[in-house]
Image (cartoon, rainbow, N blue to C red):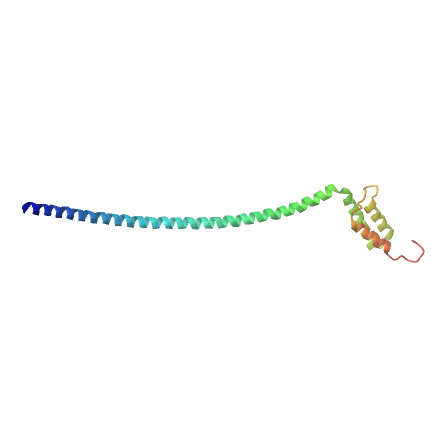
Length: 158
């Protein structure tokens, strides 16, 4: 029985050694898992901070872009209106002169200077020595109609 006892003791020692090594290995694995878990928590916290910073930065960027584009649109509208007016003036100097004559005609009508009003309306519509006139503006013709339709004094003078 001596060999059998020795073999059992050796087996017991090997099992005892394996048992200790297994416990050590499990302890190391638990320690590593705890370390990885805390490292992972740190990484998650860092990513959360990065995400907050990105969201905040994107929010500020979106606000700045909206404000900037709004300013561009407002400036473009102003420039477009000014450009439209300049094109009108540049394309139709006759119309500009006709409008000036029309304003003089209205001034004359307000002061009941009927002959002068008629002369200015004729210049606005058919032109004078300075311009060709502008026949397409209905305002000119409407005022001429009002001028011709007005009641006349019965003094015998036209």
